[in-house]
Length: 430
Ligand code: ACO
Image (cartoon, rainbow, N blue to C red; front, side, top):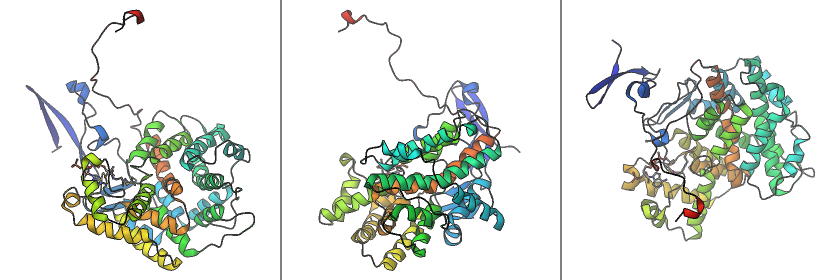
């Protein structure tokens, strides 16, 4: 028998269908709620609201599960490459050998940006945050492909835009960095694969080569894989919302970068590093900062702790913590920030406040430490996140565009302002 949810408002009872996902997640289908009851659902922050069905990512926050297209994140982090994972996210299955070779080759072929785009970079001040530059550049990319900016692109056109975005986001990111340090741009090299090519563009210069270290490539590859998708988070929802108006994929991805910039989302790992440094500079008194985080009046939160969905542990944080140890040992780096991070994790996890609220280290708690070890400065951390998340944004946008349920996103509100009142001429106002 089909299950229904009953809603009683005053004397009236309404029935709504229940829908169920492939992993048993249930939702009350409220699409006809307003029409049937003249009420809307009120859920600021959307913690209880499903905005779509999706076959890309499965998360069980209580059990600490994350899977892309059914494959566990732990397995992908160990066995897959970033490019392979990008294919999986976008096309729903692991690529065959030739498909992967073609997909990779396309990233190599399309890694250069239009030479004129360098003039756009020139117009930016050196002090500009690279996220602002990157989001503008990703949106500006659309200007170079007017033939692809249709409200309803064909699957082949979406494939082309996907290649352009995934390939060029790393070039644009590296150029944003070079601009911020006043060094000349380094062009991508055809002989290098995706991650190695990015490192080359970041760290080589006209007067010195950058030696590719396979361990560093693997560490960065893992970080990018962990960031590929995370269902309907703030930036992905932004991409879907913008795309739901049939805005093109370049514009939608650019909106995703803007959403990711915020310290409560992609900017968190930069804030983690700043927080750990502040604690060290202040004498390393962890109890003081844990107490401050518990004091609501202070406005201070332990950055890198807590997650809207994970209420047990963040599986990505576990993978990254292990990688941080390996990469620091390999590079012979002793980072006092890692020491203080491990201690802080212990102190916080034995404190009732954090235990009761199920606040655990999230993906951002340790990722910044690896980026630092590789030589990537903290203002570039959210940029790294954008490179990793680009395939996820594309997969989600494509899924939405191809869905029969596509509707422009338009939440409602409960108005709490003034009731009707008259316009008062300026000389009569008090
Ligand atoms: N430090 C101290 N207290 C916290 C923290 C924290 N980091 N996070 C949540 N809390 C407390 C809240 O004050 C609240 O307490 P209360 O119930 O007494 O009022 C309770 O825990 C629940 O917090 P919410 O803000 O309601 O949780 P929400 O799910 O909305 O927020 C978020 C999740 C934004 C990640 C939050 O935990 C946070 O601000 N963390 C720090 C920033 C951070 O690390 N962001 C990265 C997220 S991962 C990512 O984007 C890839």
